[in-house]
Length: 205
Image (cartoon, rainbow, N blue to C red; front, side, top):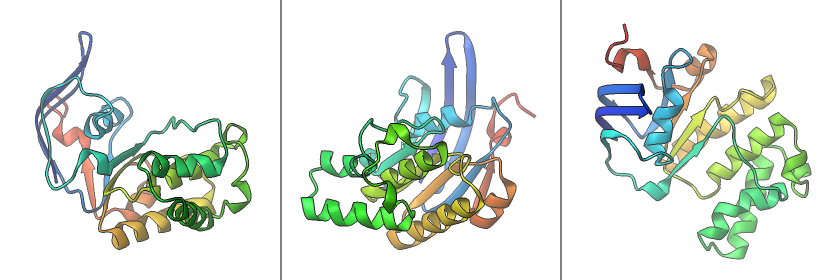
């Protein structure tokens, strides 16, 4: 569970988030919805620890910082092979080589990108890159995955495939997904709970 209290985030003199209280379940799938500019991505950056300069409290109960991953909409891939990108979180966590191989090959198969294993990530299409970014996020089996528009670059078939993988992952790993999405049909398909961000912002009707 994530408990947010009296959260204020500003860039210079501009206040971009002001949340008195919010509780987010870290099990299952939760969608965060809201107009552009409300601060959804900023909220995710704060929850993930990517940004640390804020007022108030973000209390994470029952989950460690190392078990959280955030796939941003403008995701960054290493200028290495697709295989190496997915393996990277496992290598820095010092997984056994055979376990890394098995895990990466499993994810390549799940996302149907086996044919891209040796391709340099800098030469991928936007859709291929998005699949690799999500596969990399799942690689070390995090307990909480934050996703910013996770299928924005994917075609219909790849969108449904990714939704299926994420839903199965949450169930099998007893994990959580919190995702930003403007796709109401996707939210209806996946989310167990939807948070309307504007309802939690002080000064926003």
